[in-house]
Length: 614
Image: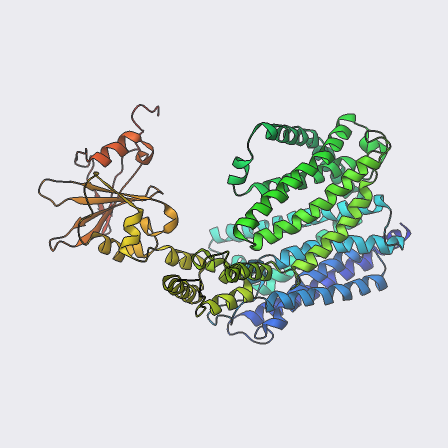
């Protein structure tokens, strides 16, 4: 506490230091932003240098802003140097892992690319937050494991600071945007153009952030008051969640687990529930003081909550194992495995705390969870470091697993997710897909090899993930489309030339309608609009979008309209009538309106199914 007090006595110097750091950060980020604008100049032309610099200037100054009022200059400088080395190294890997050459028609370097490259910047920021708390407390108490009340105070104080600072900066920019809008009402656009410039926006943001950190740091009573209120409110949610979880677990012996597995998101939901339980247990326990845990209902809920962590995490691990056994590893499953390991450590530690406690409901309630919280903080840093380096990079692990399954013959080539490899597998995935363009295997048929080579070439030639997905999901032949169609009235067949015309239409080539393989079965209804016209066809896919095709004078099929389906896909009477061809036509109630050469159609209100109450 003495070190903190001495730092607080130097408030003017601390504030000046924070302002200087904010200005240095602003200059660095501005120069990087300018270098990355077209035409790019050094260091943006060297991605392996640009990305580490960007990450260092984005994250490390925040450590200085927080630490300058907490610990002395020498240990802070040492910690900052270590953080620079770590962040720069991880930034180099974040860039080196990305695939292929950089597109020349855009700016690929920046926060959007880092965040889009899965998780590097966001998760690194979280890891630095945890590490900063551990370093600050260790320095202040001069030991590896400081007193738990110190850990609690530092962690929750800085957590509340981070929330308040983020809100302050957000409101700050909301005010500036409102100011620009107000002046724009008077045709004065200077202010609106001013705040859009990088040379204004970046320094304004860093200075606002610095001021917010300083204000929240020199008024600890404000932070403690907000923290106490938040923890008290959250702690009363623990009994509610425990009752829900106990009810859920209690119903499992009487029900099958199959509905749980069929959701395909059971593991994620169970892990989120376990994490929320741990959070609320700590909201109840706080720093372990007797007055914090005087309510018996909270102690009961905390003890039961710690016990039910075991089945929750076990079920999550089981669900994850089933998915991995079926489909192998992907990026999200590797991340889920890391979260499961961390939560399993909490679960084990909390169980030991209950077992070793003289009285789990007494004054020393769950005292040993303090050790668990400290150790799992270090475990979280180890897991993050592994995930953010080649050691356990989720993209590398996914590619290695999927290619291993392909080589072992447990994964047929047509089931290989080339899109995930190309767009989620970083440079390892791109190389794997590139190798698959000419890959051969005696166990594959000629058709399988040709399809694999064609799909791999298609995936590599497109930068847009969703466009590639639409292309790969299109049927490759009329026979493929016919297999997905149900044609009505029963007994009739598709007219000659219709399937070829449908596949050649812009509607189908853009991946709409029945051309997308994930749409499921499609319906084709042969109808008569007028006695003097040839029969028309309504194509309706499983997403309930409908289009009308008619023959022109030459007999060629053309897309002539889109159907306003309203609520009819859910009406059994409508489906039965269309399937049997029992339809009538009626003229439109209102004429169309032509405005500026554009036809506007007046649509009546949506009808309800027969017998359904509006």
